[in-house]
Length: 171
Image: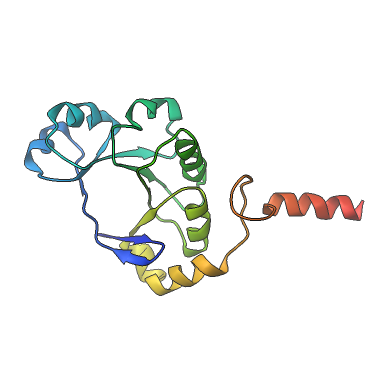
């Protein structure tokens, strides 16, 4: 089980996960499939809307052919300390993807604002994270945590830019 959150709070998930080509015919409606299944899902034209799940280490060139075909891209995070998915989200948005962008994995509430600022529309959280950080904590963190590590999004300077400026002032 998992919980799906967007900027307004918890929401229902309309997508089912399908990991194998053989299981496509067993599932009706919206599905999220991995790269190994996406071509068959597109060819079948059975499941709509269609989502694609990729890891944060997936190169953008592997996704470019699907950006105008899928309705949702889910980016997997193996841990909260692996920020590659945040960078991939920015590249996906810059490449023109206008559909729903979902972060999936054990992020923490302090990363909610950063994920939204990188282009994610929603976050799918495992139950273990939700048990430790309930929805109310995520909603509060979204509006409290304003500093960000990556440049080029959000408002103001990144944490790194602030640190470098402070070092220059001390020198």
